[in-house]
Figure 1 (spheres, rainbow, N blue to C red):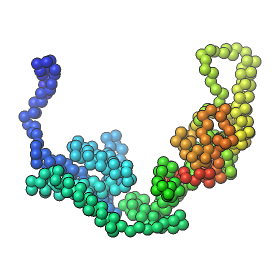
Figure 2 (figure 1 turned 120 degrees about the vertical axis):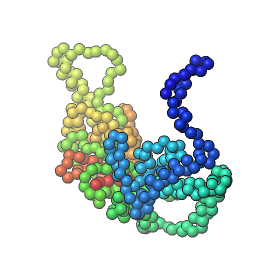
Figure 3 (figure 1 turned 90 degrees about the horizontal axis):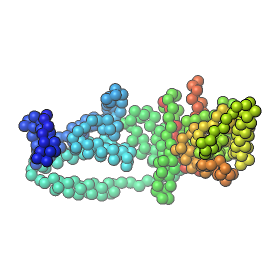
Figure 4 (figure 1 turned 120 degrees about the horizontal axis):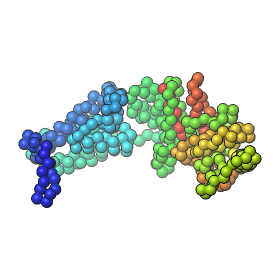
Length: 385
């Protein structure tokens, strides 16, 4: 490789291997692109269907993934050809819009390219081939409408939906529990679905997992599960008919908005400052008790003194809860998120029939389950195994 300059002093690169390179045009270029697309489809073909095989993928970092999911395989596949990149985008779009069929759509695309190659060799223009495929898709769509069967389902009779859902799990590694998982998925969707508007807000379904146990221990929680525990080990582990205060403000005295300093040079001054801080904590706890809160969930932390005071005043609390979890808790319990402590009022409290701390055998892991909420349209799928 050498560097040269044009008449205007702009540099450009001269490749010594330029003579050995060739530029494809016309039919040869089409065939090269078709070959790249067929290669991608061929790599996924063995993973299609109920007898599809898994593939072992190794990332540049050495991480190993075993899967037969088309989107996962293509996501980790390093491709340079533009047509191959388009097929990766096709799989990603299918996964985003539908959530399934990522392998099938790539294999179908490869078959269409294979048939299009034969038509190109006959001299048919690519635009004509694309128009023909579009007409064929309309015919196929009309035929599907003709042969489709409508079935009715209710909350008491979900068997048709379960049978449909089971077909999507047959080729997965969890197929031995496909009926149980299908029932959980169907009940979760029906819990958050608005059947009148035919709308399903999947953001209301939270998926939480814990390592350990068996796959059969997977359960559907009609509420929210938070990967947190009570802030003090002596706080109650089970609260019925809970009134929940949801705070995004720190449970501590506000920091003064000034750069001035206060020198504490005597014991009396330190005791005065400490007494003022304790008084503020006591007022905050009493404020929560006065509005009727029986559980405090805070986005931020609070120090050990406030934590001990909450335990003494019999007010359970949970700290360091993420913003997404807070929103789901507010939706499920019908409460309002309080950004400033002075704005806490009884009408902003959320209601839940049961709040319990769930333990996992001999481990120290704990999880907080908020169930029987005022608005049961937020659910959690808790996965084990």
